[in-house]
Image (tube, rainbow, N blue to C red; front, side):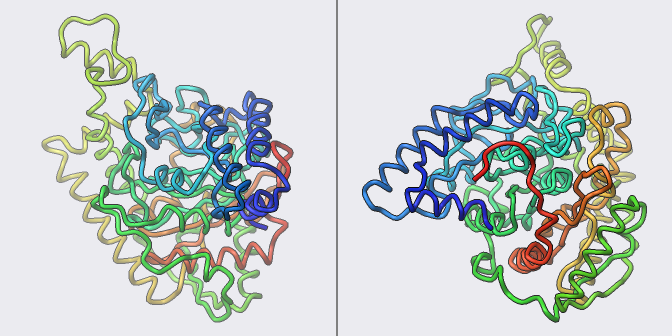
Length: 485
């Protein structure tokens, strides 16, 4: 059952007050966060103020909206007016935005209760959450393993039942990968369906905000709430095909599911077995399975890292210690001050990606790397367009492996880059994709699969994911942590 709907029913029937519910979550955050490290900023006072407003409305006999009074959390790269927003980087310590991100403005207007800001890889650059200035979030299924990244804090909070839902951002898999690692649901919407206004940019042509939830129904509810057209973002069109929740229980019999053979290359045997079982479930539900090749997918990872790093080197040029955030204490002149501020303020992974991006944009290398990557991006887009002439959506692994142990990303960063191999093609093409749990390995760590749709086909992939969840509820396991509704 939808966690959000269950909370809504409890509040509406006065089974619990919003103040009581919010206090339950705050108490569990205090109890669990020392080990999970999901939150880097808990907004107790703001949460209780909003809860009080919701209780006053219910006491008057007014109806409340589906998200009204439901506690939630935001990734720390989403701007929150007057609330510190650091992107989990030393260089933004003390920065309090003077405006709200549009997605938070939308949810705030709908009565959402903000529990706090969640942990993330610094500036969303990482696949384990361990590049965070505050240390990484851990996995509620086994705290010796990472929660994934970059939206690791949000995934850890939702999987650990210390937030009913979270908003994250996905540049190359940063919602779907931690959702897969933590055994929950993560939706990366179509590029342009959700406003990016107020999202602190990593790579502007790839970034997209989306929900991290316990169930597919919850993902649909939150997506519908945040996917309105926003004139403040010139790339935003809003959702195009109506409210997704209205069609989430449609029959999937006769739908054509594409299996791209290249997506299955190089994945762990336990992941491969779980995907094959999921395919059989869809066949039992009446779907038609179509296998085909998409050779250009093998270029997606280098294309992604060239474009993402190039855009990052431009976007992060604004952090100079002059206007906001961290500033070096000792320097000789303004140029030395900027150099020292960036050297001291950025972590190693962020500096590595800025240098890579500056290199591929530099004279003599622009044509060889950046220009070639953009051409290949167009080829990948065309390949997906051709694929959706054959099928309704594509089924693939979310990540080639399960969550790795803490410290692995630091000791072997190249292997952690490979965790993005199945997710980055979606961002390159601007497509929607949802990750749902589809099994567990022998150690009990979750395995995720993703359903990839054509542009603005969120309703279609949410419906197909919901059909799978109903058929295989045993894959959506709870953890020992947090609030038990």
